[in-house]
Length: 503
Image (cartoon, rainbow, N blue to C red; front, side, top):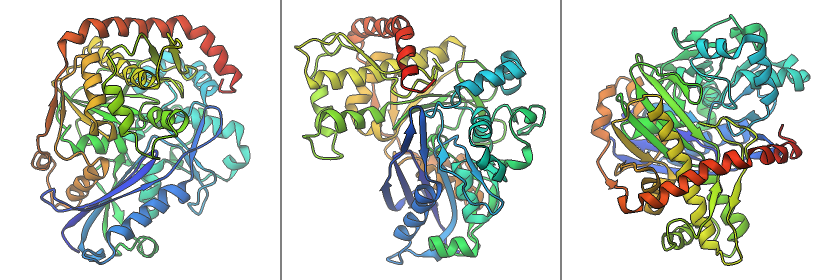
């Protein structure tokens, strides 16, 4: 085996891989775009083999084509993916249907209510350290049992995106404890293991992957996986992680009080804690390493809104190039001409946990321009970020620094708007390659090449985004309107969501 480390991340709209030295130098990187499927309102899916496994194989072959790096240069591999997702497998380990995605898929609303009634809402919260929401996998398993009985009868294993990829690489059924935490109410956060006390309402633990820490060795590359990927047989593979956790590791968010804000298709928050501070509005989950907890949160549609806006309202711009929109938005006066935007196009996760929420734009007049509309979207997302940050502060969680990552962190326009609206000081490291960079680090730890504390050697300081204090009065007013608009429009919006078939 060589000494280089391979990290691969399968995200919502693209997959990325990086070949990295033990010193953190990126030798090669590659990206593959892909899409999602929305077969019904509130349903969001991806094909496990056609997208997840396909992308892993394609990226491995692209990076290890022998010019100048090949299979024998790789010391270890780690994979992350979107999650938590639900994928049923048959007795041979083959997918029985497309994967049901994380909290943006809100199909299991009735099943959440059923489990709350059967177990008790407070009992669920006390056991799992969080409440059932669209992010939870237990209700989606129950949905599968009820609505697709033919699939359920053939189901032998239940897995998630990252665990499925580890399964394909190694033949071992493993899951990281951070992702396993969302398989509630089947996971005990105190022991870090599956618990059968509520299994009769959902599924037996025997169907689930064995939990482990993200930098544990899951297994080694099998002969079949080597043929598919071009990796060498026997290459060690880490347990891996959900994409947001790997992204947090990639920028050194590993110490208590560190908060990552990940600007991707969704916006995700991970606050590292040594002791949990459970609250029903947020997700209390295991960290990457023993002795750590994460207070996690997530908005449902953020970066995906900019993509929607370009696809529907800016088709005159070059495909895939939103730079002109951001440049124009930067020239619009704060407040977007009196517009308020609720970015709840797929319901909203934290802190609302409202699968029936929908997008609202208020204040439109004939005088408004496309640039103001786009600015309103960015400001609406910023208000959502502030809502989550304020909630963390309200429940007493300590934040000592904020690190911004993800595709949205590549443009100062959006980051500056978020800082101005929320008052956050945001750090942006020099290298923000994404979760695949964190995966490469996890691979190095799993192989014994690196120690966990060495991530500080990989992360190089970059730019700082400071809030413009002069804009605080403007944005305090906007934020109050943002909160009021949700409450005032909630009943109507829920009726509309029901007509769309999501309830």
